[in-house]
Image (cartoon, rainbow, N blue to C red):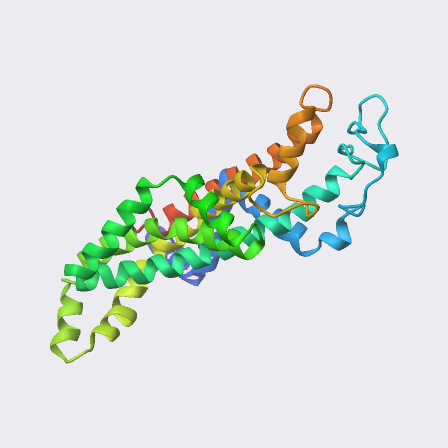
Length: 305
Protein backbone atom coordinates (compact mmCIF):
# COMPACT_ATOMS: atom_id res chain seq x y z
CA UNK A 1 0.00 0.00 0.00
CA UNK A 2 2.84 2.36 0.86
CA UNK A 3 4.45 1.53 -2.46
CA UNK A 4 1.31 2.53 -4.36
CA UNK A 5 1.00 5.79 -2.40
CA UNK A 6 4.61 6.68 -3.11
CA UNK A 7 4.15 5.88 -6.79
CA UNK A 8 1.03 8.05 -6.94
CA UNK A 9 2.88 10.96 -5.28
CA UNK A 10 5.74 10.55 -7.76
CA UNK A 11 3.34 10.66 -10.71
CA UNK A 12 1.66 13.77 -9.27
CA UNK A 13 5.05 15.43 -8.85
CA UNK A 14 6.04 14.61 -12.43
CA UNK A 15 2.74 15.96 -13.65
CA UNK A 16 3.27 19.22 -11.77
CA UNK A 17 6.78 19.53 -13.22
CA UNK A 18 5.46 19.04 -16.75
CA UNK A 19 2.88 21.77 -16.20
CA UNK A 20 5.63 24.28 -15.38
CA UNK A 21 6.17 26.40 -18.46
CA UNK A 22 9.53 27.28 -19.95
CA UNK A 23 9.00 30.92 -18.98
CA UNK A 24 8.49 29.94 -15.35
CA UNK A 25 11.71 27.92 -15.38
CA UNK A 26 13.63 30.86 -16.84
CA UNK A 27 12.17 33.20 -14.22
CA UNK A 28 13.04 30.77 -11.45
CA UNK A 29 16.64 30.48 -12.62
CA UNK A 30 16.85 34.26 -12.95
CA UNK A 31 15.66 34.79 -9.38
CA UNK A 32 18.22 32.25 -8.17
CA UNK A 33 21.04 34.36 -9.64
CA UNK A 34 21.43 37.53 -7.56
CA UNK A 35 23.88 39.05 -10.03
CA UNK A 36 21.43 38.63 -12.89
CA UNK A 37 18.63 40.17 -10.81
CA UNK A 38 20.85 43.15 -10.04
CA UNK A 39 21.71 43.48 -13.72
CA UNK A 40 18.06 43.31 -14.74
CA UNK A 41 17.15 46.00 -12.20
CA UNK A 42 19.90 48.28 -13.51
CA UNK A 43 18.92 47.76 -17.15
CA UNK A 44 15.22 48.32 -16.47
CA UNK A 45 16.07 51.39 -14.36
CA UNK A 46 18.09 52.98 -17.18
CA UNK A 47 15.37 52.20 -19.74
CA UNK A 48 12.69 53.61 -17.43
CA UNK A 49 14.73 56.79 -16.86
CA UNK A 50 15.31 57.23 -20.58
CA UNK A 51 11.63 56.82 -21.49
CA UNK A 52 10.08 58.83 -18.67
CA UNK A 53 12.83 61.43 -18.21
CA UNK A 54 10.47 64.45 -18.61
CA UNK A 55 8.17 63.04 -15.92
CA UNK A 56 10.69 62.01 -13.27
CA UNK A 57 13.34 64.68 -13.77
CA UNK A 58 13.08 67.26 -10.94
CA UNK A 59 14.61 70.11 -12.97
CA UNK A 60 15.46 71.18 -16.50
CA UNK A 61 18.80 69.50 -17.26
CA UNK A 62 20.16 72.42 -19.31
CA UNK A 63 18.75 75.27 -17.22
CA UNK A 64 21.62 77.33 -15.78
CA UNK A 65 21.52 79.17 -12.46
CA UNK A 66 24.93 80.54 -11.52
CA UNK A 67 23.65 81.60 -8.12
CA UNK A 68 23.29 77.90 -7.26
CA UNK A 69 26.50 76.68 -8.85
CA UNK A 70 28.52 73.92 -7.17
CA UNK A 71 25.95 73.13 -4.50
CA UNK A 72 27.06 69.97 -2.62
CA UNK A 73 24.91 66.81 -2.49
CA UNK A 74 22.47 66.07 0.29
CA UNK A 75 24.13 65.63 3.68
CA UNK A 76 26.97 68.09 3.04
CA UNK A 77 27.36 71.58 4.45
CA UNK A 78 25.56 74.19 2.34
CA UNK A 79 23.31 71.73 0.54
CA UNK A 80 19.93 72.56 -1.00
CA UNK A 81 17.13 69.98 -0.43
CA UNK A 82 15.86 70.64 -3.96
CA UNK A 83 19.13 69.33 -5.43
CA UNK A 84 19.67 65.83 -4.06
CA UNK A 85 23.05 65.24 -5.72
CA UNK A 86 24.05 68.89 -5.93
CA UNK A 87 24.66 71.10 -8.96
CA UNK A 88 27.49 71.53 -11.45
CA UNK A 89 29.65 74.54 -12.26
CA UNK A 90 26.77 76.20 -14.14
CA UNK A 91 24.12 75.53 -11.51
CA UNK A 92 22.49 72.63 -13.38
CA UNK A 93 20.92 69.79 -11.39
CA UNK A 94 23.08 66.64 -11.35
CA UNK A 95 20.14 64.25 -10.93
CA UNK A 96 18.28 65.68 -13.92
CA UNK A 97 21.38 65.52 -16.11
CA UNK A 98 22.01 61.90 -15.12
CA UNK A 99 18.42 60.98 -15.99
CA UNK A 100 18.52 62.69 -19.38
CA UNK A 101 22.02 61.32 -20.01
CA UNK A 102 20.50 57.83 -19.90
CA UNK A 103 18.60 58.71 -23.09
CA UNK A 104 21.77 59.32 -25.04
CA UNK A 105 23.44 56.17 -23.71
CA UNK A 106 20.44 53.97 -24.54
CA UNK A 107 19.83 55.43 -28.02
CA UNK A 108 23.48 55.32 -29.04
CA UNK A 109 24.28 51.89 -27.58
CA UNK A 110 21.14 50.16 -28.86
CA UNK A 111 21.40 51.68 -32.34
CA UNK A 112 25.12 50.91 -32.64
CA UNK A 113 24.67 47.33 -31.39
CA UNK A 114 21.78 46.64 -33.78
CA UNK A 115 23.77 48.06 -36.70
CA UNK A 116 26.97 46.16 -35.89
CA UNK A 117 25.09 42.93 -35.09
CA UNK A 118 23.20 43.00 -38.39
CA UNK A 119 26.31 43.81 -40.42
CA UNK A 120 28.55 41.32 -38.62
CA UNK A 121 26.00 38.49 -38.73
CA UNK A 122 25.43 38.86 -42.48
CA UNK A 123 29.16 38.99 -43.17
CA UNK A 124 29.81 35.99 -40.92
CA UNK A 125 27.06 33.93 -42.56
CA UNK A 126 28.24 34.50 -46.12
CA UNK A 127 31.94 34.34 -45.24
CA UNK A 128 31.59 31.04 -43.40
CA UNK A 129 29.22 29.44 -45.91
CA UNK A 130 30.95 30.35 -49.18
CA UNK A 131 34.57 30.54 -47.97
CA UNK A 132 37.22 31.16 -50.61
CA UNK A 133 37.84 34.73 -51.72
CA UNK A 134 34.78 36.11 -49.93
CA UNK A 135 36.02 34.71 -46.64
CA UNK A 136 39.58 35.92 -47.24
CA UNK A 137 38.51 39.48 -48.08
CA UNK A 138 36.24 39.93 -45.06
CA UNK A 139 38.59 38.27 -42.58
CA UNK A 140 41.57 40.30 -43.75
CA UNK A 141 39.41 43.41 -43.45
CA UNK A 142 38.55 42.34 -39.90
CA UNK A 143 42.26 41.88 -39.12
CA UNK A 144 43.06 45.36 -40.40
CA UNK A 145 40.29 46.92 -38.33
CA UNK A 146 41.36 45.07 -35.19
CA UNK A 147 44.88 46.43 -35.68
CA UNK A 148 43.56 50.01 -36.04
CA UNK A 149 42.99 51.84 -32.71
CA UNK A 150 39.35 52.74 -32.16
CA UNK A 151 40.06 56.28 -30.97
CA UNK A 152 42.06 57.12 -34.10
CA UNK A 153 39.30 55.74 -36.31
CA UNK A 154 36.68 57.71 -34.38
CA UNK A 155 38.69 60.94 -34.60
CA UNK A 156 39.23 60.50 -38.34
CA UNK A 157 35.57 59.81 -39.13
CA UNK A 158 34.12 62.45 -36.81
CA UNK A 159 36.61 65.06 -38.02
CA UNK A 160 35.26 64.55 -41.55
CA UNK A 161 31.55 64.02 -40.80
CA UNK A 162 31.16 66.11 -37.65
CA UNK A 163 30.22 65.17 -34.06
CA UNK A 164 26.50 64.40 -34.09
CA UNK A 165 24.27 61.54 -32.98
CA UNK A 166 24.09 59.83 -36.38
CA UNK A 167 27.84 59.89 -36.94
CA UNK A 168 28.55 58.58 -33.44
CA UNK A 169 26.28 55.60 -34.10
CA UNK A 170 27.97 54.94 -37.45
CA UNK A 171 31.45 55.05 -35.91
CA UNK A 172 30.54 52.72 -33.06
CA UNK A 173 28.63 50.37 -35.35
CA UNK A 174 31.53 50.08 -37.77
CA UNK A 175 33.96 49.23 -34.98
CA UNK A 176 31.73 46.51 -33.51
CA UNK A 177 30.89 44.22 -36.46
CA UNK A 178 34.12 42.21 -36.29
CA UNK A 179 33.28 40.17 -33.19
CA UNK A 180 29.88 39.16 -34.60
CA UNK A 181 31.40 38.21 -37.95
CA UNK A 182 34.10 36.04 -36.39
CA UNK A 183 31.77 34.21 -34.02
CA UNK A 184 29.09 33.62 -36.67
CA UNK A 185 31.69 32.51 -39.22
CA UNK A 186 33.09 29.96 -36.76
CA UNK A 187 29.59 28.61 -36.06
CA UNK A 188 28.75 28.38 -39.77
CA UNK A 189 31.98 26.55 -40.55
CA UNK A 190 30.95 23.80 -38.13
CA UNK A 191 27.28 23.76 -39.18
CA UNK A 192 27.55 23.75 -42.96
CA UNK A 193 28.78 20.13 -43.00
CA UNK A 194 26.02 18.84 -40.73
CA UNK A 195 23.68 16.12 -41.99
CA UNK A 196 20.58 18.31 -42.10
CA UNK A 197 22.37 20.91 -44.23
CA UNK A 198 23.60 18.22 -46.61
CA UNK A 199 20.04 16.83 -46.78
CA UNK A 200 18.59 20.24 -47.70
CA UNK A 201 21.25 20.65 -50.39
CA UNK A 202 20.54 17.15 -51.74
CA UNK A 203 16.83 17.97 -51.95
CA UNK A 204 17.58 20.98 -54.12
CA UNK A 205 17.45 23.71 -51.48
CA UNK A 206 19.03 26.98 -52.57
CA UNK A 207 21.99 28.56 -50.80
CA UNK A 208 19.77 31.38 -49.57
CA UNK A 209 17.35 28.88 -48.04
CA UNK A 210 20.16 27.04 -46.31
CA UNK A 211 21.71 30.25 -44.96
CA UNK A 212 18.60 32.02 -43.70
CA UNK A 213 16.31 29.09 -42.84
CA UNK A 214 18.76 26.61 -41.37
CA UNK A 215 22.05 28.30 -40.44
CA UNK A 216 20.80 31.67 -39.17
CA UNK A 217 18.51 30.24 -36.44
CA UNK A 218 21.44 28.25 -35.06
CA UNK A 219 23.73 31.27 -34.72
CA UNK A 220 21.13 33.51 -33.04
CA UNK A 221 21.89 32.37 -29.41
CA UNK A 222 25.59 33.38 -29.46
CA UNK A 223 24.70 36.61 -31.25
CA UNK A 224 22.20 37.47 -28.51
CA UNK A 225 24.87 36.91 -25.86
CA UNK A 226 27.33 39.12 -27.74
CA UNK A 227 24.68 41.84 -28.04
CA UNK A 228 24.17 41.96 -24.28
CA UNK A 229 27.89 42.21 -23.62
CA UNK A 230 28.49 44.70 -26.43
CA UNK A 231 25.82 46.99 -24.97
CA UNK A 232 28.10 47.62 -22.01
CA UNK A 233 31.08 48.30 -24.27
CA UNK A 234 29.08 50.72 -26.39
CA UNK A 235 28.03 52.71 -23.31
CA UNK A 236 31.68 53.03 -22.29
CA UNK A 237 32.70 53.99 -25.83
CA UNK A 238 30.02 56.68 -26.02
CA UNK A 239 31.11 58.05 -22.65
CA UNK A 240 34.75 58.03 -23.79
CA UNK A 241 33.94 59.94 -26.98
CA UNK A 242 31.88 62.48 -25.05
CA UNK A 243 34.68 62.83 -22.52
CA UNK A 244 37.11 63.66 -25.34
CA UNK A 245 34.68 66.14 -26.90
CA UNK A 246 33.95 63.87 -29.89
CA UNK A 247 30.49 62.78 -28.81
CA UNK A 248 27.18 64.59 -28.46
CA UNK A 249 27.92 68.27 -28.05
CA UNK A 250 26.80 70.48 -25.13
CA UNK A 251 24.37 71.49 -23.76
CA UNK A 252 22.86 68.00 -24.32
CA UNK A 253 23.64 66.06 -21.12
CA UNK A 254 25.75 62.93 -21.49
CA UNK A 255 27.48 60.86 -18.82
CA UNK A 256 30.86 61.21 -20.52
CA UNK A 257 30.38 64.95 -20.92
CA UNK A 258 29.57 65.27 -17.24
CA UNK A 259 32.80 63.44 -16.43
CA UNK A 260 34.72 65.85 -18.62
CA UNK A 261 33.13 68.86 -16.91
CA UNK A 262 33.83 67.47 -13.46
CA UNK A 263 37.51 66.59 -13.90
CA UNK A 264 38.48 70.26 -13.37
CA UNK A 265 36.68 70.29 -10.01
CA UNK A 266 37.80 66.91 -8.64
CA UNK A 267 39.47 68.44 -5.58
CA UNK A 268 36.92 71.12 -4.68
CA UNK A 269 33.65 69.60 -6.02
CA UNK A 270 34.09 65.83 -6.15
CA UNK A 271 30.43 65.07 -6.87
CA UNK A 272 30.55 66.48 -10.42
CA UNK A 273 32.58 63.52 -11.69
CA UNK A 274 31.84 60.94 -9.00
CA UNK A 275 28.14 60.43 -9.66
CA UNK A 276 28.37 60.11 -13.48
CA UNK A 277 31.28 57.70 -13.08
CA UNK A 278 29.36 55.68 -10.49
CA UNK A 279 26.30 55.46 -12.78
CA UNK A 280 28.42 54.28 -15.72
CA UNK A 281 30.11 51.66 -13.53
CA UNK A 282 26.84 50.29 -12.11
CA UNK A 283 25.06 50.16 -15.47
CA UNK A 284 27.97 48.45 -17.21
CA UNK A 285 28.35 46.00 -14.31
CA UNK A 286 24.63 45.21 -14.43
CA UNK A 287 24.65 44.58 -18.17
CA UNK A 288 27.68 42.30 -17.87
CA UNK A 289 26.10 40.29 -15.05
CA UNK A 290 22.88 39.92 -17.02
CA UNK A 291 24.84 38.93 -20.12
CA UNK A 292 26.77 36.28 -18.19
CA UNK A 293 23.51 34.75 -16.95
CA UNK A 294 22.03 34.84 -20.44
CA UNK A 295 25.14 33.11 -21.81
CA UNK A 296 24.69 30.30 -19.31
CA UNK A 297 20.99 30.00 -20.12
CA UNK A 298 21.57 29.72 -23.85
CA UNK A 299 24.42 27.22 -23.58
CA UNK A 300 22.93 23.70 -23.68
CA UNK A 301 26.10 22.29 -22.15
CA UNK A 302 25.57 24.35 -18.98
CA UNK A 303 21.81 24.21 -18.49
CA UNK A 304 18.77 22.36 -19.69
CA UNK A 305 15.26 23.79 -19.61
